Image 1 (cartoon, rainbow, N blue to C red):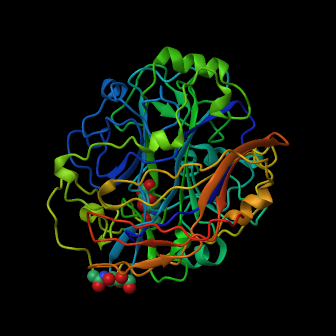
Image 2 (spheres, rainbow, N blue to C red):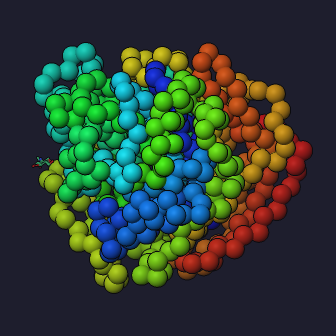
Image 3 (cartoon, rainbow, N blue to C red):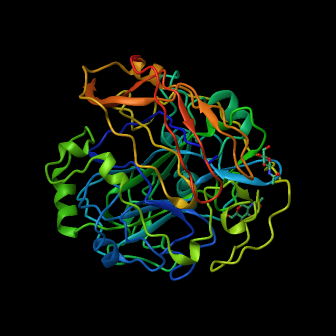
Length: 503
Ligand SMILES: *[C@@H]1O[C@H](CO)[C@@H](O)[C@H](O)[C@H]1NC(C)=O
Ligand SMILES: *[C@@H]1O[C@H](CO)[C@@H](O)[C@H](O)[C@H]1NC(C)=O
C-alpha cells in the first residue's frame, strides 16, 4: 500500500456548547514512541502522532514548547496528540497501515462551569491498550436511564470510545460515541462506504493538583455522562473536554479478505486509547477558554489564535530517532509494527514489553479473528446531547496516505479561490470512492493506475442552520500514475489529464 491515493471524507460531530476544533490535518509521523507511557525507550506499539515537532522518547512540556513547528493549524498550540493507527492484516499476516484521512481533529469542548486551562506540564491518557471486552449493555441505554453501574469510572471510560461507521448518504449520521467497538470486516464492507471514524473522549474532571499520575489517568475522572454531567468528589476542577477524531479509509479494503487491527494488537477496538501532552502557554490557553466561546467551533473565530494553512502544517514532521530507522510501521510488513501479537480477548491482554528494537520472528501466519464482536446497526444520531446544531460541524478534507518510514506527503493545496458555497449533498457527491487497493506488494509493487483521483480546485466554508461546513471542492477525471518502490522510498509520477471537469 505504498501507493499514492487520496481520499475525501466528511467528518461530523456537533456540540451544544462552546468549543473549538483544533485541526491537525497531518500527522508529524507514525512511530513507536510514547513519552508518557514508555519514556526513554521504544514503545511496544506504533502511534500516529499529531502536533508539535519535538516529539520524542523523552519529550516533556518544555521540549514541546521549544518546537519550531506544529502540524496543527494554530501555531501557538505545541501540544502532542497521539493514538494507535488502524492496520489491515491479510490472512497471511502481511499488515499495512490503513490510510488515515484528514489527520486529526482535537475538540476542545468547554463543558461545565469555570473551565480551567490545562496547567503547564499537564498530560493525560484515555482508554486502556489491554482492554478487550465491554462489560455493559449494547447499545448504551439512554443517558436519562443510566443507573449507578452505567456511571462508574470504568463504565464511563469504556463508553468514551467511538467507532463511527461513515456513510454520507445516511442523514443524520451516527452519533458521536454511539458504538464502542470496532465493527467486524463484514459489517464495515456492507455498511461503511466512507470509512470509519475513531473517536476518543478524554476525562474532563481534574483533581486540581497533579499534572500527571502513575497511570496517567488517576488525576482525572469522567463526568457522569462521559462528556457532560457532574464531576465526582475530589475531581471538581473542570478542564477542557478533549475529544480526538481520526478517520481511516477502511473502505479501501472493501471486499479484501483480512481483518482490521489497532496497532496495539487489538482487533476488537475495546483497547483503543490516546494520549495528550499539553503544549500551550497556560495564560493563552486560559484566555482562549474564556473567550473562544463561539459555538461555531471554528478556530478562525477565535482572534487569539495565529493560524497557519493546512499545507504549512503538513511541512512539520518529527525527526525519526535512529533506533526506529528500521521500523516500517506503515507497511506492508509481516505482522504489526514492533511485532505486537494480535490478542482478541475477551481476557485482559498481556503486557507487551517496551524497548524492543530487534526484529523478532513474525507472528503466526494467520490472525485469529475475534470471537464475539457484537453488531450494532445504524441508528440516527438524534437523541444525543450534542445535536443542538442539527448536523453540526462538518469537515471535509483530504490527506495523502503516509509513505513508508513515517513520512507523509505534503497535503494537497487548494488550487483556486473559493467559488460560491455549495450544499452538503454536493459535497457528498464529490466524495469519490477511493481506488480499490491493489495487493500489498512484497517486492516491487506494480505500477498502478488510479482513475478519478480527486484534486482540489478550492476550499470554502459556509454556515447553514448553525452548522459550519468546510467544503473541499475537487476536480474529477484526473488520472494518476503512482510508482512505488518498496520499503523506504516512494517515488511518484503524477500525470494530470483532462483538467476541465468539475464535480
Ligand atoms: C474483561 O476485561 C476485564 C479487564 O478490564 C477483565 O478483568 C475480565 O476478566 C474480562 N472478562 C473476560 C470474560 O475475560
Ligand atoms: C500476503 O497476502 C497479500 C494479499 O494477498 C499479498 O499481497 C502479500 O504479498 C502476501 N504476503 C506474503 C509474505 O506472501
